[in-house]
Image 1: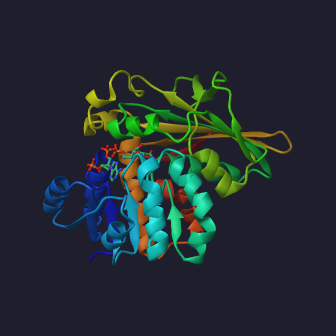
Image 2: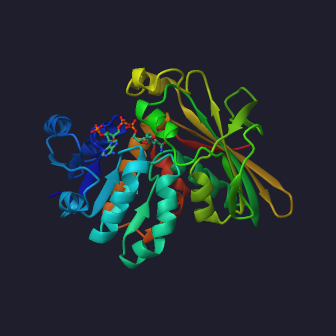
Length: 329
Ligand SMILES: NC(=O)c1ccc[n+]([C@@H]2O[C@H](COP(=O)([O-])OP(=O)(O)OC[C@H]3O[C@@H](n4cnc5c(N)ncnc54)[C@H](OP(=O)(O)O)[C@@H]3O)[C@@H](O)[C@H]2O)c1
């Protein structure tokens, strides 16, 4: 039995992550609920597989037996994060996922003390947008004395995966949230904000969107005021029937559609600092960064309880992904 289990390995992102894990020479087992898909994937990768659904705690415990680290790629996380986080705490296994919705983060906040006592790390969003936004935030505040607010925007481009669209539709909250004086409160959906992504187009309008960074950035930095925005270029937001969407962007589409993150930090003296993170498409970044995070955890980089990638690894973590760079504005 390998130390690492990749659960949800048969999905679009899970398959990419499993492929990268193989190319990193990690020893791992693929897992999920669909035996036929797992059997085929395991044969392609020449790894073992385990079949278990998340709704039976005994089956989950048996499925995770012998592992040290779980990378959960099975979204919507609304259905999978809680049973897998609980099983990881019961069994002394570090929990990592790639969630872009709030569920895993709220659960990780709630389970922090229990996980800490079990010496288990909860690292939701170990790759993906949370690593991008968190690392840009840490990069900026390194040179800001007493930051009091951050406005941060994710520029997405190219088609979304079908799984992302399903997860977004099933998100825990239909509310739009921001953090104000340390508390999560409603954010006005109509209050767009302009950001310059340093891509030659100047300032573009971004719409308010509840990204998990309203929890993750608060956790990492204690900045009491956080607003999160999205700019969706071209066909980045799905329209029409989700079931008829392609499973995810092709390699060509990923290559043609890099992501960017822009942030504005205000300090207590009113001074403003802006910077941008240029990076690759989210569906390239997420499997690569999550496997890199997993590799580091397997090598012993861990802290018990709820952690964020930027706090655990530092902001330079994102720089391991080729094509990623910070720029001060
Ligand atoms: N943070 C980021 O920036 C980022 C980037 C990429 C993806 N994501 C997130 O990652 C998740 C997966 O995306 P994807 O495009 O890979 O989706 P996908 O292709 O639909 O794959 C989903 C995987 O999860 C499994 N699954 C779904 N519900 C399950 C359940 N209730 N119990 C057990 N397994 C379940 C599926 O198993 P079956 O094959 O058996 O159906 C499949 O293996 C989404 O939530 C997406 O938002 C986040």
